[in-house]
Length: 578
Ligand code: ATP
Ligand code: MG
Image (cartoon, rainbow, N blue to C red):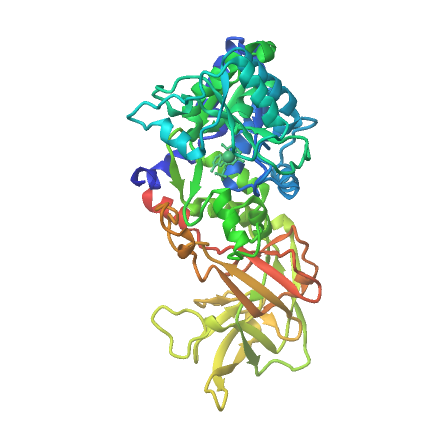
């Protein structure tokens, strides 16, 4: 969809607009002022437990819990678990973990739509008795045919005028397992000519055998989402039912149900549904179905693969709850669908880590460098700052010796123009150490590959020394060969090659996967202090990006994920714009 494309202006306009001033908040402010629902604010986050949560859900979580928190209200967590076939406890657990990790608390208000199955069933009986629902024997294909189209009215089912007695009897037998799955359904009797197709006698109950994670084998019939959802909201006393735009056309149906069963839920008042635009991000997909397909087909390592837009993936990648909440706040809330540049998400974590992360040295592709005039057995512990943005974080000591590693990329035998790093006869500064000069390049005799650089150092260029202020163009990070620890570093690129990988719903989006989305560097070296790196601690590896220890990291095999590189494409875009 062309109008779904992200435009820089949209983001710039949205940025900085806080949750305190979105259009939903305005509605709530008005409702509180008018004493609607006794000025209560009660929201809910209602996931279906059929997959792990993604960053789109984070937007909904921040919105629902945020609006409750900001307005003296409360927010429920409710599993919309009306489909026994697709739902699993693993998802129920992961969803709770993710909401908590994001920093939100549903206190004692954890609910399941399944808790309302008895009530929903009673309400269905009432609808039948009122003449508002009937059992229909049309096959799914016939139902589809009878439904009509956007321009054509539907046709009434031949079963539409069954008597109340017959309907009660058949519905009871559906419940008792007398018919096979899919043989019959219970439908609301509304209007087959309604302009809104959702009102053309929608199905409210289906026969479906399958063990439900909460109710086991008790039920053979299950309520449809559109029936269960608005009633669950009403039963919980939800005041503002916030959902995504695709439910806008379902609102008249929800209102119809609530009108018809008003005697059952009237004491709570009516939830007001308010729709907002879903979050879409560039270079990824955001539907649980598609994410599940990636996991089930082994195209990623799991739901928490650090390339996934899932909360668990982002967590493993090294994102913080703070950065994700900040992102959700910056994108704002609107009615118009758009695709947000993933660079904005990266910008949010980069901004946080720039001020928070401890600096460390890591060499991704080591090249050995020998300082020929430095004593062979000497070790100097040189002082270096932990975080230049936060001087109060102090300094640490790093070992300097005659043999060090530098980044292979930081040396060029025949330097291109503006290459300010090391090349023959040139000088560079080693961060927090000395200025060195390249004297000789050693090659492997057989392969011709450069295997070692020989340099000399100037002892007077040390910090505090007489030539400390000497100017050279480049500063390199480095590690003492003797002290450096081997580590595996995992670098990530976007999961997909295309900005909008599922633009064409007909095409196979998995063809758009980026073959370079994971690069494993297994010869890397890191600073000794990283032996102790905790899983929650994030570092800036100087000149290389922000990193966090992976779940799989162990003291005898260190593994770090690159969260983001240092280059801020979003900040850069914005700067150009200004
Ligand atoms: P998906 O299409 O990814 O399967 P869903 O809407 O089916 O998502 P639910 O478990 O039903 O997933 O979603 C729970 C809540 O999160 C709903 O209120 C839904 O509207 C909201 N939500 C889901 N995806 C997004 C998104 N991309 N942006 C904002 N809110 C979302
Ligand atoms: Mg859904």
